[in-house]
Image (tube, rainbow, N blue to C red; front, side, top):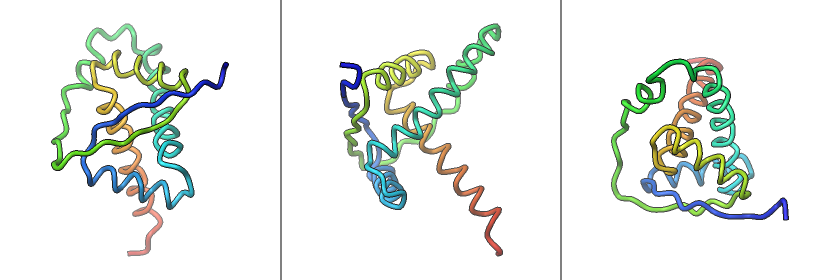
Length: 125
C-alpha cells in the first residue's frame, strides 16, 4: 500500500508543455518523472525554508507578489506521482496560496532558468 499512485492534472501553456516534453526526452525520463523530480526538490527546499522562516510574518506573501504572465493557448499535462508526493505538493501550494499548477510551473521555470545560467557559464561565446 505504501507505493499507491495518484495523479495531478496541470494547466499550462502549450509552449510550457512542449518544453517539459523536450526536456524529459533529453533526460530519458517520462514526463511525470521529469516534473516530479524538479517539483519535489523545490517542495523539499520550501519545507526547509518554512521551518527556518516561520518567524517572518509575511514571507510567503512577498513571494506571491511576483505573478507571471500567463501564456495562451493553454493545455494540460497529466503527471503521475505517489500519494505522499501529491500530498506534499498540495500542502506546499496551499502554504504559498498558489494553485498546484502555479507551484509546479514556478518550480519548472526556476529550473529552466538555472539550466540556462549554467549553460552560459560553460559556453565559450
